[in-house]
Length: 320
Image 1 (spheres, rainbow, N blue to C red):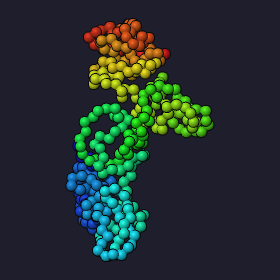
Image 2 (spheres, one colour):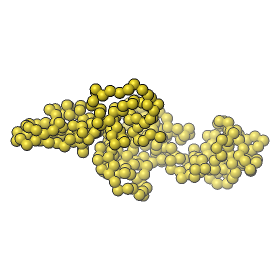
Image 3 (cartoon, rainbow, N blue to C red):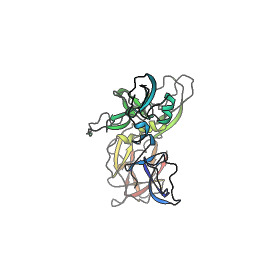
Image 4 (cartoon, helix red, strand yellow):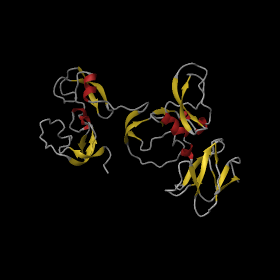
């Protein structure tokens, strides 16, 4: 097991790059395979971890801004290692250090700025438990520590790579709305949750009206519309969904390695509703299974009763 930032290689270099040697192009190294954990491409080793070269403590980008002792007034640029950005300063004209550039472009080329996805911003002291649409209602205990990285600005929560106000967080009820193109005639690729198939499907959005069952990516749709995300099933239970109502149920699952074929479903005592199938899929009964009405909701769902109460029975199933 390799530590974070490193990956295993059966033929790594005998002379890995470090903060101390990455600039030394004349270093000699034997041509041999070394097995172990190595930093990913473009990164160098430092104190047991991996960093970008510009993050090494002796790199010019990590030096503090130094205008020097002279009193001239020359506009220059330096890399602010705290904000992770190139900023302007006034150079006095003598001495100083290497963290000084003539142009913004030169600074950005030497010291790449931190890039955050979507609406997120870089912070040196963010929360160890950033709030998201998934956990915004949870009371969580979080360590009081600074975490460096990309997080959403105050007043917003994360929805994938986007940052939104809490009231803009989608809920599963949005997924039960029909997929709607809308009356406009634009051609915008989008994804919506199909309650019948239980899948996020691609459709073309016209660009106006429609409804909330409209997501930019398949992953965003799945993150919101996977109903089992909202279930608190035990580890030995299956999460099952009534496709007609969207209600979620936890049902005892078969032991690992059950002999069922892909077209069959393993059912254990106590008897349980197969959700789905109703009403889209129904159980096909044979000599070993009998079909009875469910005692509880949903009332129109059929359940399969195993003939042998001591073991699971494989009952064939089919589409309606």
